[in-house]
Image (cartoon, rainbow, N blue to C red; front, side):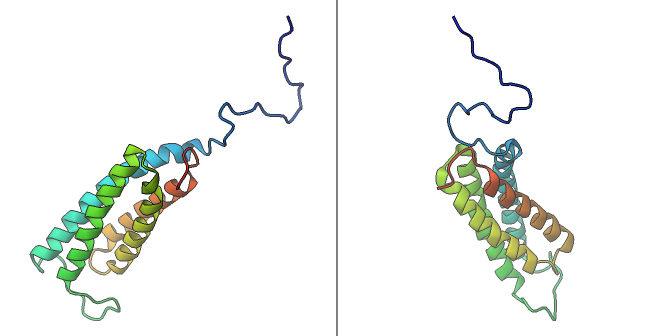
Length: 149
């Protein structure tokens, strides 16, 4: 019986993957699961932010001369709707839905833009949310363990 020979030292050949596909970055694979949870949390916080903006104008400070000036109630509705949809997409990512990654990238990009325009109202929280959104986009774009579409 012959046994498979070990590669010679210094050779550059790699063992073939069992599935024949590139498994991708393991950090990105774990990051995708974490991104799903972060989407759920970001969505819940967006809902809370939206309800606070809709309920009363006393929660957030009024900004007078700002280029992206909307009524705080309008901002509340924007954050509420984005939050509900982000919760739905986060649940889809955790369930492994193939549509959820592409939709997640698009909606998190919109959430990032909305939080950038929301900076004068809550600057620290908007920056934290933007950082979370950047991580989510990275994780959803770099995970190659499952097809994106």
